[in-house]
Amino acid sequence: MTSHRMIFALAAATLALGGCSKEPAAEDVPMTVHEAMTQHIDVIADEVWAVGNAAMASDALIDPKLMDDAKWAKLADAAARLQNAATEMSMLKKLVVNRPGVIISDENIEGGTTSEQVQKNIDADPEGFRGMAGALASHMGDIAAAAKAHDAQRAGALVGQIDGVCENCHLEFWYPQQKDLVKQIMAEGDGAAARK
Image 1 (cartoon, rainbow, N blue to C red):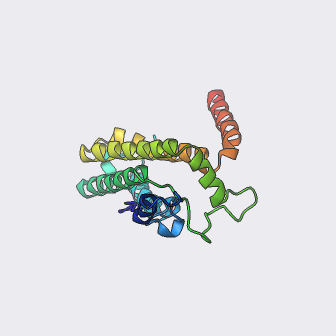
Image 2: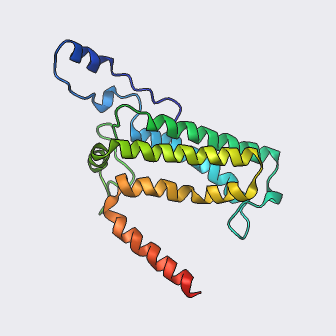
Image 3: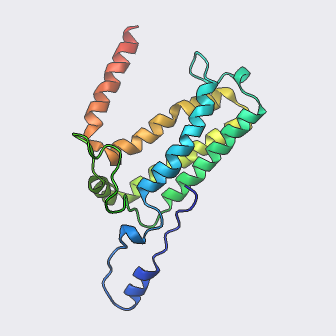
């Protein structure tokens, strides 16, 4: 997710000429949200998890004995790249979910969300989406800092929280219809933990 600069020269020229203020089509956008997520954010997140999971201790934190300078550097680098990718997504001027004819992962399954539905969700709260992308960037910056400091406890806790940071955005924009189900599952999990 290296470059998401949005250039709308054609739209600007149209406005300058007093024409209609039509938003750019997906074909005119250098990077869509779906491309940013699948080609950059997901890929780099897998790199972060690969390091963290390989060094995970029984308490679900990073075992410092399973880390060395190269692994800490790899974790810091991946986290910093994901921070940059999420920052760039948070700064997109036009949030276009997908190009025509491209489907998202669960679009063809029963109950799945379509690109059009996700676009509608993001259009209803674009600043909320940008804010969540910014929250991911901030989280990854914290992981990079912890990795540079070889702080196994902090880095491990933060790596373990990535899923939650991502899920907050997904529940809001990708599949908000599943919020009640997720809350129910979480409540059942909390109840089971309390009974132990």
